[in-house]
Each structure stands twice: as structure tokens, then as C-alpha cells.
Image 1 (spheres, rainbow over the protein chains, first blue to last red):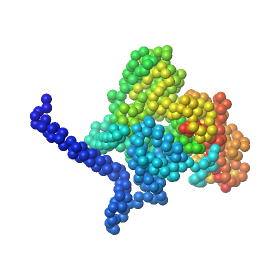
Image 2 (cartoon, rainbow over the protein chains, first blue to last red):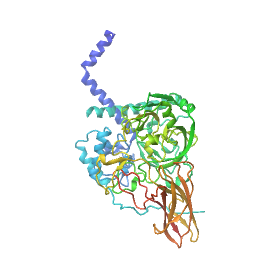
Image 3 (cartoon, chains in turn brown, green):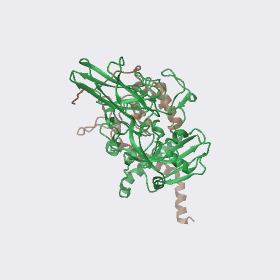
Image 4 (cartoon, rainbow over the protein chains, first blue to last red):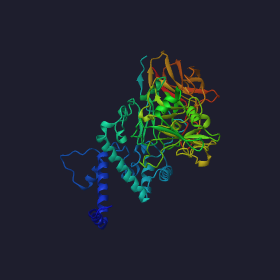
Length: 158
Length: 407
């Protein structure tokens, strides 16, 4: 049912399959990057800072404040970019930052996500991600019941 | 592995593209009263019409908890009900085409109902039902347990209207070998993979056939809000909230204990026998949580109240006990050395939380904590310390307490 004109075009596409695949990949990557940038506008700041001189007239938005990465809420630390890339594609950063665990505990969570939630293999990034998580989101000893803390005192008017 | 990764890339891109497009293109065609959750992003307080003091634990998936003092209403209003999601909220709900199918090994013949059929064919019932997340209180466990770190507020008692699951199951016809029901909803897996079921849990037939187990279409007299399961939700009070399946599309009547996602160990399970804090527990040694334990909350005043010396303090709150009733409610201002009784009301109906109140006087000025303790009809009381540790951090029913300063 395909007319000869169309068949010709298809053949040409077939001949240039490699090039086309690359172009599609670039396009997809570009769109992902664009969408990601739209959602996390501060992400690119580092890269630009590293490679381009900062224009004096522009005041870049701070990426961190009080040791917290503003776009995600993660604590500032080595390998954070790896953590952001691998851990916030499916769920929010809050899923990580509200939890505390040992290195073993974090690894168990990663295995669970790989076995049941379609998380990919982390390869050589895994030990680096675990380093970050175990250092900045380690458990605190809280005993069998913690004292009440951070009480916001107020006058109770009856 | 590569294809998996590509799938994730493709699906999230498709999702984003579709969402950005639909926002503009289909904006005028949305059904009346339908609130789209664009990009599942944005301001949760306006998007879900939630009280501004609610606490966002997680924004993908959305998990939002309330605070004890916000739960002061006798019946929890929509704006103060916690949100717990395992996946993404469905976005393409067409109530005119919405159906509920009852199938599974133990039905005589599968049957499908439209919303209208459910509403007209069966008698409607309204109950106040306590729904508490199995992981409410997880934040306090030590060593910590993974998951959303709920503190106190993953509990509610709203008024639900619907038809009895039992009436519907009888209409379908259930075989004698039925063991369990399992629900299926319209929510979407976090990866965007349409083949993956987010969560499909259920209850044994005995719980399914109770009068108070509803297929609900109204919450507090209105259509169920989108985040709480619009347009149809299974509601089984007194059990972990995860059995009350949202965006209900299908109920399977099983001849085995239901085996949908999140029924498997260790989800919503605790060690069958007590373990030491931090112990590793084998999957086969974990048992499914059924009725929730006895618990209470002081909802007035908010913690941190300062009062003048010589003045009494009126306290109030709610108490609940899973399938059971609360038979006694007490408070202590001396860390449990002495307990005094609270006034305790009967529940509005079975599985509704009960209201308590007391007038507290303090012997001298200083720092106090008012602790509340409920005891259920089987004689189980709330522990003052954390209850038995479990790997997933479920069932923390330790006494609630508020700080008070007398000056």
C-alpha cells in the first residue's frame, strides 16, 4: 500500500539511520535538558560558573543557603550532583531528606528500588551515592522516647 | 537494563509533554467540578484545598500530614485530612464512564457497575470512620525506619457515605471459597509505567462483609476530593488506611490471601514475634497488620501553651482503637506517676473515634507535660515509651503529650 515516493523516502531514512538516531537522541536529550532546566533553573548555575566567567552585572541566584541546596533541599556535600541525578527522577528529594539510615540501610533501600521500582543499576556511582547518604543522612540516637523539643511557646487565652 | 532506562526516559518525557500540552489544549473541555493536578506540581495547599498549617512530607508522590491541634474538629473536615499516596494521582477521570468491576476466582461471574448503578441499586449508608496510616508515628522509631516520616497527623475521622461492600458482593454472588478481597485503583506508578500497579491491598472476607465497610462516593457530604480517591473509594475504618483503596476501579474476590503489590512482605507487616530494635527480620516472619492499636491525641490546646498560675487548663481530644472501642481515657501531668480520668464519649458509630475532655489543675508553676492514655475494650493501654520496634516503623501508638508552662 506504500506509494513509491514514500518508499523512496523510507529507503533514504534507512541509509541514514545512524545519523538520524543520533539526531533523535540529541533532540530527546535537549528536550530533557530543557524541561529539567525549567524545573530546576539553578542547576545550570554551577556548570556556567565553572566554564564561563561570571558577568559582573548579573547577580547569580545563590545555589546553597545555610548548607542546603535550594532547588532540592539536599544538604550540601560531595557527590550531591550524582544523588540528584539518580535519586530524584522518580520521587522527590524529600523522600530522601526525611529519612535517616546507615550505609547498609541506604543500600537496602537502593536494592529494594532496583528490585521492585525499576531503578537502574547505579554502577560506579553507587559507592559515591552511598558515601553521601551515609554521611549526611545518618541516624541519630533518640532512645526509647525523645524529650519534647522545638516547642513554640504561646500565651493561651481562655 | 538499557531498555528499562530508556523506557523511563521516554515515559517521563511523554508524561511531561502530554501534561504541558493538555494544560492549554484541553483546558476548556475539563468536566465540571474536576480539578486537574497539572504536573502533580504547584502549590499543594490550593491544589488540594488544604489548611495552610498542614505539613508536606513528600511532593512526589504527594504525602501531607496534619498536626494534632488541627484535628480538633469532632469530624475531620476535608481541608485537614492527611494525604498519603504511593503513586501519582490519576488525571483523566471521567465520572460518566467510571465503572467498578467485581471479579476474581471467588465470584460466580464478574460484574461491572456504573457509578449511577451503585448509587441507585443499593441502600446508602453514612458512617464516621477512623482512618489511620499504618506508618503514623514512624518518625519516632529508633533505629529509624524508611518511608514517609509521619509524626502524629496521619489519622482522620471523616464522615463517609456510600454503599456496603457486602451488599454489592452479595449481588455479584460470592463462592464459598472466598478468602480475601483486593482492590485496584486508577493511580499511576511513579515511573509512569502503565503496566505497574501502584498498590493493591485488601482485607479478609470477615472485614469486607462488615456493615461499616463501604464503597464510598461522598466524604463529609460532598464528592470525595480528588486527592482522597474521587470518585470512588473503598473505606474500611480501624485498619491501616492503605486497605481503603482510592480511585477504586476493581475489586477482586480472591480464594487466597490477596497478593497485590504492597500486600507482600515486608509492606504493612510487623514481625510475627517480638524482635530487638534494629534486628533483621526475614520476610516469612512478618505478619500482615489487621486492626490498628489503641491510640489517642490531645487536640486542644496546641503544645506550648503558657497559662497563669492558679488557672485550670481544659484539654480535649480523640481516642480510637481499631476494630475495638476505647473504654477508658486518662491524663497525667507527672510523667505517669499518677493518672486521672478524662470524660469519654461513646463513638458516633462503630469505628468512629471518641471524644475526650478533662479539666487539669497544676500544683505550682513550672514546666509540665500533659500525657494522654487510652485503654481499649480488651484492656490494652497505650505505652508511654515506644511500642515494640519493627523494621518498617508501623503501629507507633505511644502516648501523645503536650508541653505546658504555668507561670
